[in-house]
Length: 66
Image (cartoon, rainbow, N blue to C red; front, side, top):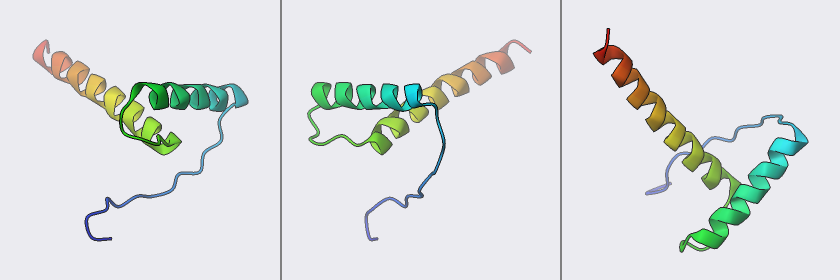
């Protein structure tokens, strides 16, 4: 693993509807990106990173007003 990021496998249970939504989002990403094949793990990573950024901004705003 020279330049490859270290990865771990997450095994989680979600509702069927949630899994179907992830499939739909993955297809959407595939159609709207220019990076070739899109994997569910990449989609989840992107969603989590964006949610984390929003959380950090909200934390920053909370600290400012305390």
